[in-house]
Length: 349
Image 1 (cartoon, rainbow, N blue to C red):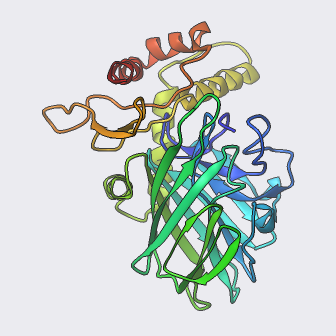
Image 2 (spheres, rainbow, N blue to C red):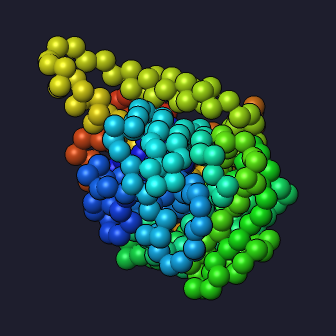
């Protein structure tokens, strides 16, 4: 589930990519040999998933799970690069392109000339390998929806974890319908409960290309909105894609290798890419974070520099299990600022 993320930055809070399999920790998420896609989740972390979205066309009947919205695709029409993913959903004839900043996922969706087009927000069952105890979503104006998803506790993460989101479209939507607790709610302004799903519907004469920003926060929807405004105030998809590629190239270029075969060099940098996916940022642009070490969650603040910037970031982890074999050494030698952040985070805990 957490071993692959295409539309993301190094250690980014957003880890966005197509998902084929939801069940189980192993052989889930993006699976190259699986024939269908059920959505695009924004969090692929250790025992943790987040809000999933899926562009759809035609008549869609909301129901339990994610199998109802699956679409076939072909690798022939797929492009995968660091910081970018593009795929065509054949059953809906939608071209989906993904990129991101650290905390905001950016979607560019090219719809066919279909009378019915919508974007599904899946905040319930079937979004990922975590059990989802609750989801919520509400309409904010005619271009924005906001909400949260609560991942239930696991054996290794014994407390619930809430992930908030603020999502904004570049065109107004026409209506909003939802499903919760196994019941079709019809046209509403908000929804919350177990197995929460919502469809954002667009007018038949709306523009074919629709862009969507989805910003995350572990603190609040207000903080998610702040992350969105701070990191992605514009709608220039190519600019974000190019910046993401530049960031990845800068991080990967910290280690230069010579000699060997091309295949060995590809393997080296693929492994280094995995090293830089290894942890996910969970503090916001202003340094606020959610402390879950006590009996109740508490919102806290990372110390700021004289310029008002957080001195370090907080990251999630699975107790840095088995990283002492070689990953700690790579982080420490090539990315000492990341190791400083890890230490600051641990001292805060």
